[in-house]
Length: 358
Ligand SMILES: [Fe+2]
Image (cartoon, rainbow, N blue to C red; front, top):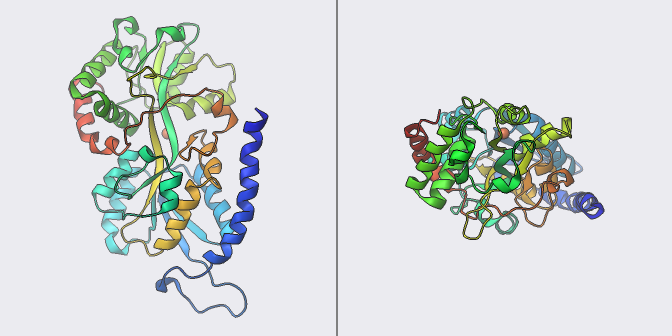
């Protein structure tokens, strides 16, 4: 425990020193368009990076503030939902002020790349820092934190030995006991897309039909309400992102909900892990600065800051999760590239629709 607690602090202290040194280099203008009349004495004015972000402002602002404090580079950002932000990028075209698109789902990043709103970034440090399956094979976007979508259960109603896989939640044993969030949420679309990638369409459709038959109640609008329904005994099991559980647990340490890591058996695909991540926009005016920010967020200098604020997992395996997150235990994540969440999203939506999953 002591090691886990002290590790991030040491890493951060080192980061401050390293970045203080790096900051001097970064003050040099990155591109001719950035160059302004140099101030008489000290460093050149740093470029201002513009980020379009779907990540909650409370979570991302401290990350940007830390970068600005360490490098002098200013960051301005716009926060909105994925649909409006993609639309805005599309409409602005070459005139967009955005340098970086930051989202909380791989499917959205895949979509952005597919719409040619991003550009490839060939960076040795990003290749090294971001786990291979949590970044775009085409190098257009990179994961920055990993979000596990796992099974949760009420320990007074369920023994963990009764649980095994996402697929087993379709068994008769769970009739009237399963809670799900709406299929309209991109998190579930990505989950089903990744299960199609692992197990094929027919098996996944049979699973989703079984889930629908087992529902205790109509799908929930959000993960928090779902977890509260498990705690209240309205349902025995459900599927949610771990950070929603973390928030509830922080407020109510004795809440009657436990996490279970599914699909851990030999030959099974592992826990579904999505990402929050980012890519440099196709028409970025401050490309080099945006790449440096991306590299910094993925590095051991900032991974705890980025992931811990939302009780998520680092995408950089050299960095340990926060102690409250580590306390949930180890698991094996799916090793299938998360770009499949985007590639198979439309197929997943159609499948859920056919299966009657609202
Ligand atoms: Fe979320």
